[in-house]
Amino acid sequence: MTDLQTAKNNLAGHTICLCKDGVCLYSEKRGIAPMMNFIENGADLSGYSVADIVVGKAAALLFVKCGIKKVFAKTLSQKAKSIFETYGVEYEYETLAENIINRAGTDICPMEKAVANTDDPEKAYNALKDRLRLVTT
Image 1 (cartoon, rainbow, N blue to C red):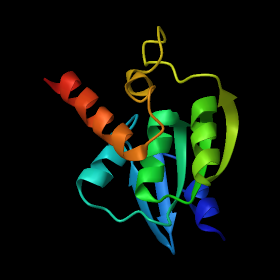
Image 2 (image 1 turned 30 degrees about the vertical axis):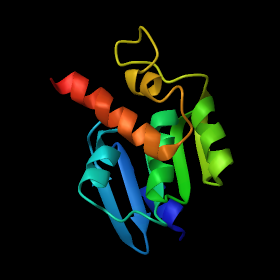
Image 3 (image 1 turned 180 degrees about the vertical axis):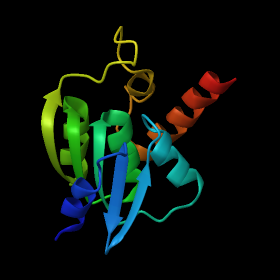
């Protein structure tokens, strides 16, 4: 079984599952929080495969930054698809969405807005850190 298939099989009950060589990491946190936590904790995710519930451009750029090689998304945005194609990340999805909407359903997700003007993973990470600081202060 491939790492991606293992991640997909283990997604139930979690918001994200990352797998590589039989090692799986999980989170129940929403949005980009799991990836931000992995990055901030210095996790080496290079070569992992990911199954995630919702993948927008913000998450896609974090995956690229971490060296994720394959992604499955229940819902994938058009912009995330474009990022994966640009950076050569293999991807699968169930539903392709024009945009990722905020939790209230009233506008574009604020994390998507934070990375709207960049396709650079490092710049996106910094923009997301800044955006999260604004939310928590």
